Length: 253
Image (cartoon, rainbow, N blue to C red; front, side, top):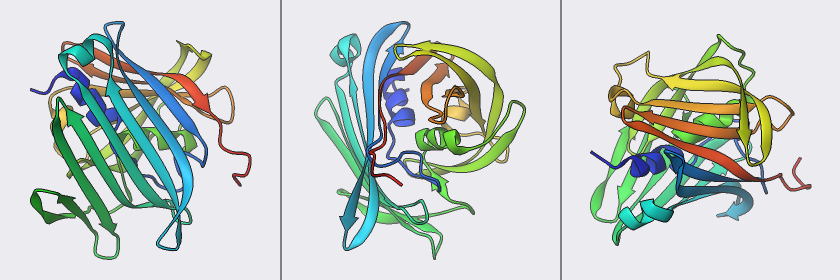
């Protein structure tokens, strides 16, 4: 079984994907403090920037993750992911991820071929594999949750989405549960609690193990900030709380 803080990084720090409108805008940045049992265990940073790749405009979203404090003493873990999106469609075109767990390096890349409905998954030490893509636009779990800030769900409503988690696709249904008040270092927020579930296909992975994923989206202003994430295990819960926010650049249109 993977340690809880590693599962947290897999859930909350996977390479980003997106549907239009994009989950983040150029210049926008988020920093989360990850805790377990009230003890700081890690940090997740996300930021978006504009770039030109092979002569084409791209939105690049970079995610860095690191264990902190006691968790780092038990398991030193650092990861960096970069994802490249086509701004006009909001579709992810390719992504890369590299992690270092106590000197054990793992890395992979994914290139999305929408015309043939496959995602090419490559690693330095194995032959490339084509992953058949179910119908829909794939997102990773955290960006699925981030992208809900652009949805108009109300308590009791739900919406389907397609999630890519490492090399496997998950067909999820995101439920809008209820309104809740959340206190963070950035202040007090009125939020909408959202929870993804596997209902259309048999549960697998973390969902099969009975773990619960939640996100709280602020409803106080037009930013709709994802102020908190939670991954609840049978033996406790890891919580990622927004501690720093950078607004999009003024030039963003």
